[in-house]
Figure 1 (cartoon, helix red, strand yellow):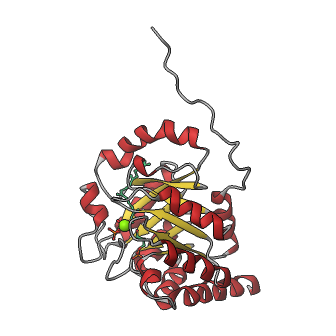
Figure 2 (figure 1 turned 45 degrees about the horizontal axis):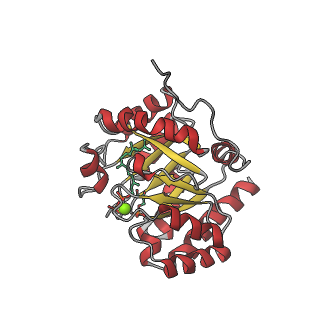
Amino acid sequence: MPSIQLPTQRNTTKRPQHSLLTTLRNHKLAGYKTCAILLDPDKVEQNALIDLLSQTQRHPVDFFLVGGSLVTNYAHKEVIATIRQYSTTPVVLFPGNPLHIEPTADAILFLSLISGRNPEFLIGQHVIAAPLLKQSGLEILPTGYMVVDSGAPTTVSYVSGTMPLPYDKPAVAACTAMAGEMLGLQLMYLDAGSGARRPVSAEMITAVRAAVDTPIVVGGGINSGEKAYHALKAGADLVVVGNGVEQNPDLLPELSTVVREFNQSAVRA
Ligand SMILES: CC(C)=CCC/C(C)=C/CC/C(C)=C/CC/C(C)=C/COP(=O)(O)OP(=O)(O)O
Ligand SMILES: O=P(O)(O)OC[C@@H](O)CO
Ligand SMILES: [Mg+2]
């Protein structure tokens, strides 16, 4: 019987880079905050993307996330190539399924949807993705992904067939994150869903912050500097903004000012 050929070695030849996970952990220890822009390959238009990338020269962000729950236009590679042309900011995939793996990114949020009870999104898709990821050379960021109810159904909930965490149950979120950390997940992502009318509450972020030592990512409905401020103040380490930046060109400068002010006070402390 022929032997099964499995990739056993990670392809690390692609780019000798420092680990993004180490960076996030070190930033957390230093009380240093970060922000990321989410680019949905279905929505980005080339000229608007180039404008945004040139804006980030003046108002830097720490990461670009690229992805969506349901992508109809598989333009990940092109979007990443454009980012590379105009920016040195790391690119992290935010995948809805294994078809969204693109080896030219730097890293991937290896999401396990721990707010849900669908085995496909807890471990099933991961088994399919594992050999591809091993060969890709992408840095794997094992992430406990928690979708939080924001008053309206989200694409993630629909696509994954899972119920979100109740908005006003911070203790449920805290225990979920705790279990995720005990299972070895290295980041926790609290997501109210793209375009959420209300972001994850400060109470929930605080409860998760008290429950785990991992860096915490918060996104969904953060469409003002003030909302970013509240998420960071409550204990988020990284805030993700998608729709907000697409719809309001003033948000990027506001966001980078909020993050900078946090970091200046961390340096003074
Ligand atoms: C294991 C691999 C490689 C993939 C599976 C990854 C898992 C478990 C994903 C969890 C469920 C899921 C569908 C996540 C998608 C998260 C995401 C990229 C959200 C961005 O927002 P959208 O849901 O695209 O919002 P819009 O519909 O408003 O664009
Ligand atoms: O588009 P927004 O609402 O900023 O959401 C970003 C992200 O957290 C969605 O998964
Ligand atoms: Mg999307």
